[in-house]
Image 1 (cartoon, rainbow, N blue to C red):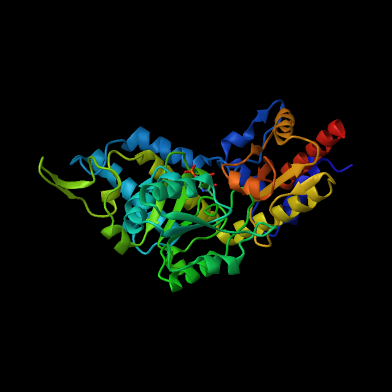
Image 2 (cartoon, rainbow, N blue to C red):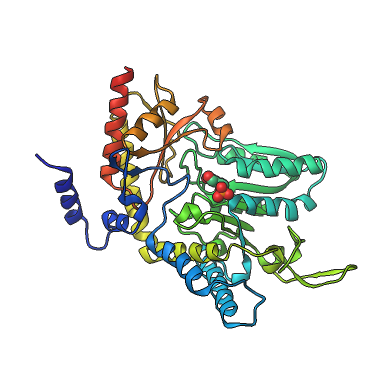
Length: 423
Ligand code: PLP
């Protein structure tokens, strides 16, 4: 009999030395070393939020234990060290997304805040009655609602580029939606509900041919795909730290420097000013102009540690492993006749979104939880996608580098058990 432990050893020795070892990686994540409901925790909800490696936890601890002070204002050693660590973090994030200068990185609370910032300080001033803002049919609510607010404020209209039954953008239809009225395009790089990877280089190029600025929501791409905003030529790109092994409450907006320089501030307060009188305020330069108040200093430092952790693993290894794991998982779920996959794009990462015929997704979530398996069920903050596929909710297993084939086997076995109960 081949036990799980033997399989693990077999798989370990079967991997070439140059490939990613998920068992090694898993050891980096303390939270994954626990039991849940009496079973080893199988965490398959990384698209919701990822787990944090020890190096990220250590970076945050070190800041609070040794370097904590407010930044940009103290003349004393501690504050200078804190400022240095925060600005170094900006440099690491700039490197991670391929920005040419650290000033192009604004620390924000996450992708949601980044998109709202661009909506209110860039797009709102550039659109009026009848102008159009284009998104795709596979957006997260945070790349829909901020644009609806701008439309309500200005009389602009939100347009939607359609997707096909596999969950892929229909490029010809997207091209047709780019008209003289289109003033801005906002699109996701990777769909959180389907796993689809959009051909964003082509989509940016098509928008730029008509001089339309583009924002890319990279929340789901960052932990899976190397990002190079300079090569992509996008105008804005957003990432959330917590999706890429960093802490919650922090993220980054990349913006082209000339655009950021021309934009008004988002919020007023300390640190975003050069001088203030009751009559007049002179704003600070970019990026500080957009970082009013005391930022999440420890968060930015942990975020940078997470970005460096990914860079140290290397995207080549990461992509090869995640591709292999997604393929294994897709084949494994295909052995269950009641599974209907939602999102079958040719270019896809990390997400298995599906329904089980005859069983409500929430029931599946609850039963799987009893077996130590954490998956997400619901609309995944992407209700229009649920409408597009005519389902109220899906079951979503989302993968990261710490997941193993045994995690997938546990998921498949539990789904088979669920079907035995409900059949
Ligand atoms: N965009 C996508 C594609 C997402 O998946 C998410 C979160 O799930 C967001 C935006 C929002 O990110 P945050 O909650 O970190 O602001």
